[in-house]
Length: 208
Image (cartoon, rainbow, N blue to C red; front, side, top):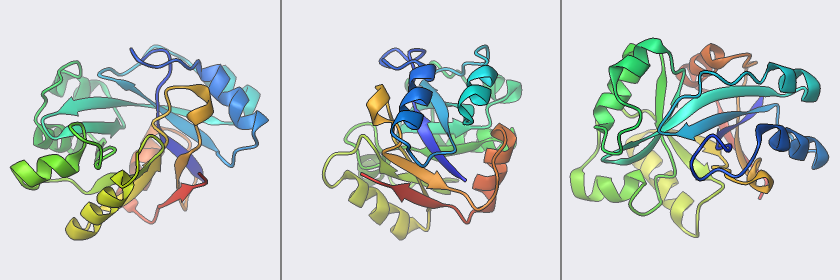
């Protein structure tokens, strides 16, 4: 099963894409995606129901979040009420180790994203702060990366033994599907996604 793990809709402050438009684009362009995850900035959108769109387009639409830490931005999958109480998703200076450990405690998974990107990626902060405890998976392929950034992310993963995922970091419709992650098992909901990430065996899928 192939999922694009990192996307933003108009629910994010800088997102310009409606979820329905993402679905239409995937089908129009015949992208080899089985679904995608909405990771809105500094929030978890618990209210939106995309069940009708899933049925209409035959796509799995899951929800996560992108939070901000002193080590850069982090995707969180499997957000639940316990985790929403564990730390303030709206903060821009969350401790990475807190995000990682509290996510694990609450049955979620934290994945630092676009690590090679200046200021908001893990690589530069590792150079100045040293490695963070508890990180196991990072995004090694990002649709928003510039030259050399994904290479830096892959090098970091190799050095520290991290597993790697891919996501488009789409903010506009035409950017979805640039990078994704191929899982060896079906993913029906957020709990399945967490289990699949914990089990491993996934790999990056990239077409552009």
